[in-house]
Length: 516
Ligand code: NAD
View (cartoon, rainbow, N blue to C red):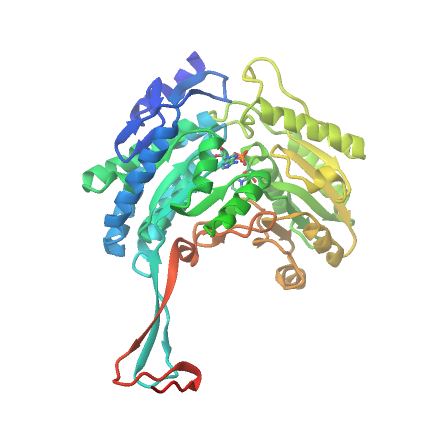
């Protein structure tokens, strides 16, 4: 371990979170085992090996499913507010471990320490939210058309919820799903990204403490650190009632088809291609901050990262010049050092994709006004640091239609707001969108039926940085799923309509006569 990393206290962080040099990547509650191959987790921050993990093998998979099935039989009988109490305790533990977990997220994934801590705060927030929801799993009561009859609907847990997650939110997405799945009475099995296995082990270790202290079944929370083949097993397994998948549109398309084939349920949180419209009535200062944070935060590796700026022709040059100036001031380097704005990409593959996208863009006619490059030299030894770049493009370019998970920002000029909205919607994805304007008419048009077609539409804030209270997710190739806030708990339950006849007659609905 390099001296620099020691300075940031990583060794102590790993120890506090129960991460060893060699870890077992399968755990059902407090039981750890793993018979699969070993993977190594290298930090994109400095290229050092953080730790090794023995992944899940075939026999581990079955053990985990059996443990989950057994736990579900007991867990579903625990009253929802009591299950909420378990989630409340997880929230308390996360407060206790916030600094360590946030630092591990930053070191293993590469996002800034502030964003790592923010991710853990989101976990705490969803726990708080879920505790409240555990007392509000409401169904409607209806007036029956038949005399002496009562009708109502109720919600039951589904069973095993499989959670497959992406590398870029290595802890929060687990908790978005588990906090709600658990209060609804489900048990969960997590297949995290193989790029961030240690974050998953740390979360499971924290949850194990809660299970142990409350004498709860181990199969309530399980983790399978493994590659995509085990993910595929989970997707195809009839015993897994719901698959919540967060990842690329390419993989999500297969997951969606395979789960549907077996009539399972799925929540899909896939790629985005998010734009901010900057109108002639925008506050330009705010627009620049929103755009730069949205484009370079997490080195452009958020599903909600700002990829396109659609700028009114009257303010185009001003915005462009100020962006170039702002990009000139960005500090790129170790994300644990809070004076840096931009950290590394996740790995060498991501760097290749960044370079490929720039090449393709240039071929199609993109004019780069801030050039991209892979950074070399002191502090950049991992090879994962790249320079955020900006290009003037047409929305129709193939590369602009595609989500490149890197800090590449595209500028597009428009004349009328109707044209800007059409450009904003003219991509296959539909996750997040924003308009910067001080004009009420423009804002309302953007939010109207004729406005943004995305799952998230913001006014005077950027595309990234969602709050727990709102339902999160997107339309079109983003998959249509919703997670976290509002009434999304319903996705984790099955609805049942009950009709009770308390008379001595059996009248049929729709007045049908059937006399014997
Ligand atoms: P990815 O699709 O490569 O991998 C995601 C997960 O799927 C990983 O755990 C991986 O092991 C697993 N997987 C791969 N093939 C599989 C298969 N055949 N069956 C089952 N599981 C399989 O995505 P990534 O590179 O880790 O993450 C980046 C992508 O995730 C981006 O497209 C980003 O927009 C998206 N994302 C979306 C959201 C959202 O909420 N919409 C949030 C975060 C990330």
